[in-house]
Length: 162
Image 1: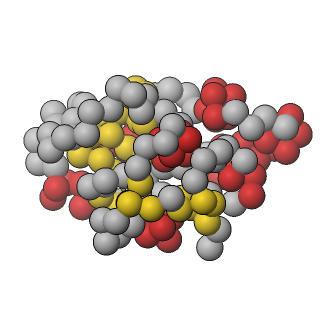
Image 2: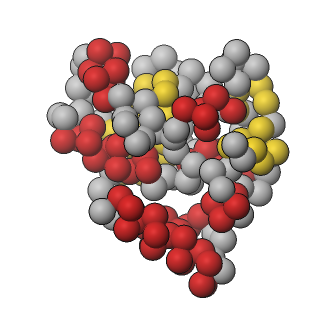
């Protein structure tokens, strides 16, 4: 299912030339996890931010105080240890919000009740000139753009591919 979702996304981008995050999310997500938009997200100690990208993406940059859980082999046991209260607000994010929806669904199945998916992910965050940080907690302009197709959706910041 996940593989088919990404193949469909890449075909949509390549054939239709869609480069807008809105179009990609409408084509790729079922909206099974409530969205939260960058301008609604008030970062504070009561919110747990979970980065659902791969480790190399997280290491380039991430939202401040985000916890890496990954995607391919998501570290959901880490979430169980970190977030004991199942009503704690959790915001998941990835590049634009497709992978994070999958992880958000898993968290809901685990009994977490207050899970949101950051609409547009780190790309939309950076596209709106919001800060991202290195693993040393230093603000950076770099964002891992996943690949050339996904990278079309990142309009601000320095794109990194590795």
